[in-house]
Amino acid sequence: MHPAQDQPSATVYRWLVIGLWLLCSVTGFMVAATIGIMLPAISSDLDLSPGQQGMLGSSAFWGNLALAVPLSWWTSRYGPKILTSVTLTAGTAVIFLQSWAPSFMVLLAGRLAFGITVIARQPAQAVLTQQWFRRREIVMVNSLSNALFGMVVGGGLAGSPIILASLGDDWRTTFRTFGVLFAALTALWIVLGSERQGAPQAGRREGLSLGALRRTLSYRDLWIVGLGFTGATGAWSAFLAFYPTLMLDVHQMSLKVSGGALALGVVTGGAAGLVFGYAVMTSGRGNTYLKLQGLLMAGTYAAMTLTGSTWLAVLLNFLNGVAWGFWPILYTVPFHLRGIQPGQVPVALAFTLTMVSAGTTLGPLATGFMQEAFGGPGWPLFIVGLSPLTLTLAGTLLPTIAGGRSSRPPSGE
Image (cartoon, rainbow, N blue to C red):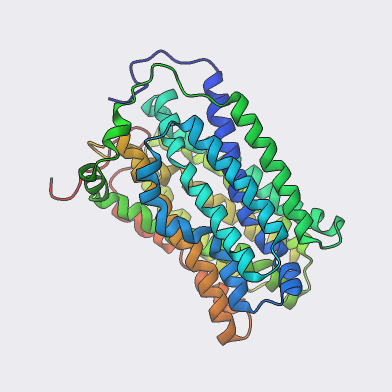
């Protein structure tokens, strides 16, 4: 039984709690995502090779790839209030460490540590969602997450070139600006964040047993979900890291324009997530949406590498953002796996984020090292841009996706 299922609806305060938590979470992703805007200045300052640039673009996600499941397994025993407070505080300190970094290795280590604080915080989302919201409302919570992601990350991509330019291309002070923002969010969470009193806690312990871990990872559909995310996020992270450089070097498009185009796509994706999340609740056609969104995403990413037209780049990024409305559809599946217990959901989501991190790690790495062979990021980005076709495959293989409908049981049952 879902923890909030038999409880009366909470006041609007529940939306404040989950909204503030999601804002803190997506701000962390914004800090990680804007590295592509600062990469030309960082590369000039630290004399980085294309391979090192690729490593820097993906390093925030390395810890997620290796540690997401074990960290979630361990940290899910702690309440979401204290877990979020500690990881936000640590994340703030690591941002300031990156602003000080005197060498590539220190900056690389700082980004790796920052990524670990982001992934360690994720179990709190599953616990808070289950404490405060009914089962049928989860897809809308994930849609809100997607919308905030679009606004914050999109705003960061649009605002970072302006901040960087106003600071004389000083990437270190830009990082310090992010650090101040993160410190303010940390203080807000400590004051306003809250768990729901009286919400059942037994499921949290179950999620820590080895048997529950094995059973959670035995869901075939969980692996299909991960495959879909891997292809999409691989292309996304590669374009965040190298698209501004490609447009600047090949088409003389300014960072403000290319960053603004990327920001438009991210903001559009957030709004599209709300639309598609509601559509799934009312129509149950999540599989059809995934199939079409995979095709649209791959096509627009590939086309973005072939044009230097500002207006065409803006249009392609907008259409790409529409395709990113897939996120709340696919991210809701782990909550509805048949027979899954509340305490297992954080582990299922951690595995999903592991696969997300596999994509965000491999995308810039593959593009960076292929660039050394091709002599530029154009063809490498075109190739990596086709990887979201895994979304179409996921939409084909998954059972019917609807707002509150469960997936098939683990393999072997």
